[in-house]
Image (cartoon, rainbow, N blue to C red):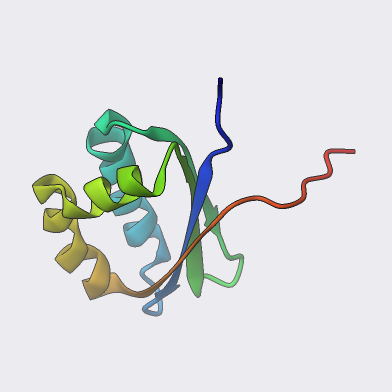
Length: 101
C-alpha cells in the first residue's frame, strides 16, 4: 500500500543578485545528498522571476524521513552555505487538493 507523501516547502528569501548561486548550491545538494536519503521521493526548485526568492518543493514518505534528512551530517554541512545566501522558512504538510486540467 502506497501512502500519501509528506510535503516539505521551503521558502528562501535570497540576498540581492545571489539567486543563481543559491540555485546551483541547492541543485548540488539535491543531487549529492537529498536524492540518496531514505524516504525521499522528489524535489522541485522554483525561482521567482524577480530574483528575490526560491521555493524548494519536495515530497517524502514520512515526517521521520524529513527529520532524518535534517539530522544528516552531510545536510547539516550545507546549512551554513545556504543561510549565507538566503533566509529560510519551512512548511511541513500534505497536499489536500490538486487539479491537473
